[in-house]
Length: 281
View 1: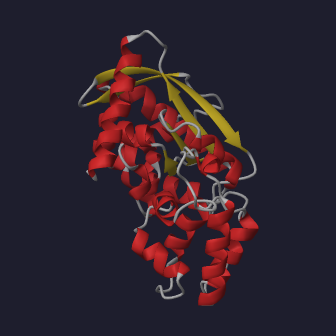
View 2: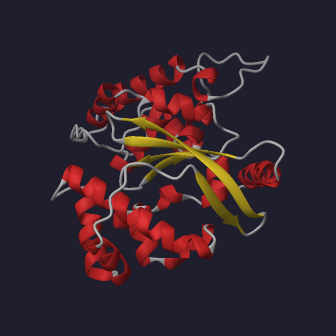
């Protein structure tokens, strides 16, 4: 671990980022060049003290998970991410075509959707980053580890994950998730993340195994979804997907038609989510 170079690199990248680059307002009293430490710490989902010690050359060696969070928070390119890992004493992650690193361009789009439910997901349904309204709607889906990261895996083996959708929609969603898994499995084959999820589900879920035998495939997704939230009730949402083909990721954006009951519920949900974030809940 090269503490001096790591500290310098983090500071330089922080100073190069402007508030507008990450969806923040500049304000009239800002004197800091680039972002403040507390702003970067929030973007990286870590404490200000932890991040500050790294910039002051006295922090512990960051884990690979923490480095991944910093690379995303600082909007690093893949080359910059690899450099960060090496400075911290880790091997750079393999340059897989389908990885967890979210490109700076896609992160800039997400930054401008702070008041909208939106999240970046891998092809097998692993959520990498969410806006606060998306977290308020779905819960924190970035907290899961291992196979649990995939919504397809959770859907069939952890029934509580279905609570966000009305019960009468579950059968259709089960078919859709299975068809999605088959498409990704066929694309990447044995040894892929999709294969690990599919193999586990075939071994543990009779429902998935039955649907898998039907060999349904689909390449389009429903643009209408009904979601159920315990505080605001049923929301009828329109879904849009922006694909990053290089990374094999998609930006899911959910909106409601202005003037509808769902639109008002979504506005309320965004306020509730912001209040929880502000209170630390």
